[in-house]
Length: 171
Image (cartoon, rainbow, N blue to C red; front, side, top):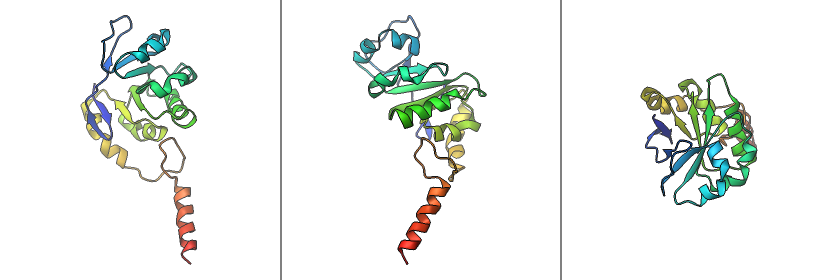
């Protein structure tokens, strides 16, 4: 499954470890929320980066005590019609200050790339190579937004206010 990071196809250094499977001694792993919550401290002490696949049906509050030690939080889109992971992403970025990799996984569609970026996602597991290749063009298509969101870009209103302020300061 292709991974898109920083606008291009990237190698995924995280090994997806199934529940019940033996953990590698070191290296980057991505594990389920259930497995992580069984013994988070032990998992976070192991050599190598740890990431967790977090379902959209579970509150992100359970992750908050560990956010500063997690390298990746992969939020699941089980269906393109189910947008709860957007809310989770914004909570993680804006309320809880998560600055690690925020990965979208599951039904990640090309049509939703821009919305996912705006919610704070910075990595995307896509099903088709063609979607991965189209990511950069899709993400660059829009440069002005009306709604404030988790990606930190200025809204159209804030841009206008800055322009008026700089014009009035120059007079």
